[in-house]
Amino acid sequence: MTPTFFTDYNLGKRFPARLAEAGIDVEPHIQHFRQDCPDEDWLAEIGRRGWVALTHDRRIRYKPNELAAVMQHRVALLVIIGDAPFPELADAFVATLPRVLSFIEGHRPPYIAKVYRPSATEAAANNKAPGRVELWHPRDSRNGR
Image (cartoon, rainbow, N blue to C red; front, top):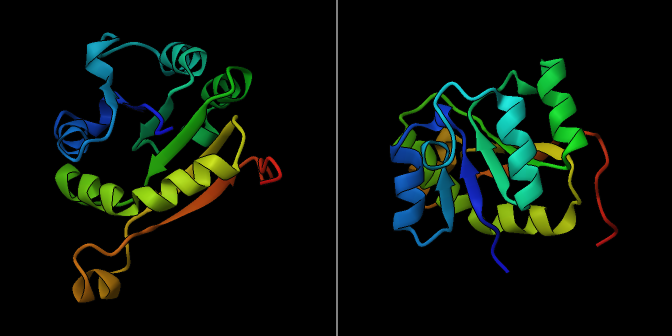
């Protein structure tokens, strides 16, 4: 079963729109929460719903209240890495989706993982090249699969 992805407000409107265009089940932040909703509040709700959260906030792991919310509410959180326009980041995520789904299947929440775009060399050779997914926190959340 394909998960529902929730996009944090910091990914804008075009990122979730691109995911939806690709047929991915996506729920944008703005459809469920106020713009200024504290991260720990939406993290609690996303954990309750069992959605996979996507954010562009690379510092979230270092914010004690937000890290605690991820762990307490058993959130699967993927941090989109890269300094590029959101449509490009979304296209890279779509190209990486099989690896993302494999990662999700092999890890039990709570966790934070990074989703990287393909390298410039890989992208130049193939504009549909997938990126990679790496566990960031905690160091071991595998569920034995």
